[in-house]
Figure 1: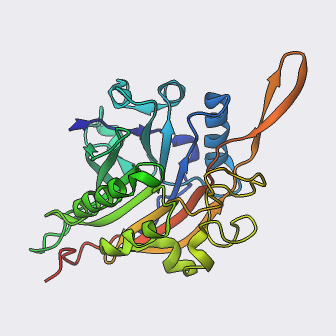
Figure 2 (figure 1 turned 180 degrees about the vertical axis):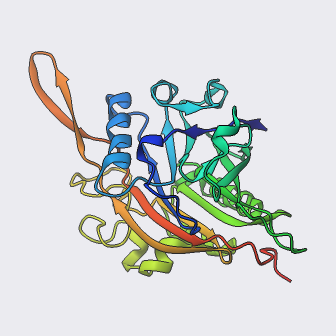
Length: 318
């Protein structure tokens, strides 16, 4: 397994006080590796996440990150490019220094901020995949871990980009089964799997529940008409994160869809709020011609918040 530590310094965005409540705002976004100006688009998108209308999140999951894009960000412990070996893009997880502390701190001074979660192992979990996809798993350890026998000692955050297109549904089913099992390993009190699930078919919609997980959007907003598979005018209102606002007809028959999801364990973590973040546009200059504008990404992002992070249960059941 490939192991690395992915850590973003958000010191400039720290809140004036450190909250001891275990509530974490997340953002997950597939930032689109293949459209024009990937570095500029990614920078604008990340600035919007950090400096936009909402308070900056504590946890950011990004998918389709190109190596050239990663090089422009302040990321600690991910200097090597092995995550991009043989693949055009990878996932990256960014964690706020305001809420998390690294276990390999350089100085005692950085230990200030009692009440922070500590970072445990970070692992890229290989998956059966046509495209070389994996699950980026990060363990987080509460400031006061439980010592009760049979309860967990840490939570797990898993950033995913499941296989694409219709013919890889068997891969997606197996991938989510493997990742869900990671949330039930001994010592793990549960957690979150989030990112691009590539849920393009009705068969995909049952995978979260079949693996004993909770679909955060459904828990908060209900199923909605058609689960966002091409139903409705532009996908708004049913949680669609892809194909939203696209007016042209597609040859593959795909309409707006809820491709991006957040799946949680039934205990230990509670969804509080969730919304779809629509991308803005960036200008693309064309020499001798009028500039064009392209979206930051072909996906919308997801902003959500989870609370509780309760260690006092055994997620494996009786």
